[in-house]
Image (tube, rainbow, N blue to C red):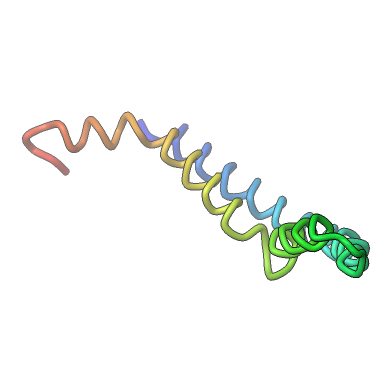
Length: 91
């Protein structure tokens, strides 16, 4: 009954893992030029550098990837969860 939802959940988790790996590859390519822009005589360059630095530094896709994964999993499992909590029997 839940096999399709389990497969979709596994695909969502796998997709986030692949995006996480791709992020690790692209991160140095984006971070280098952004760090050099920080030396420009402009507040906009500094703010842009800080935003990009927070997005591309660290391990993985960070908060954005996590939020997207939770949103997709919530969409996949919404109906069964509502059905489970709306019945008198529960689980």
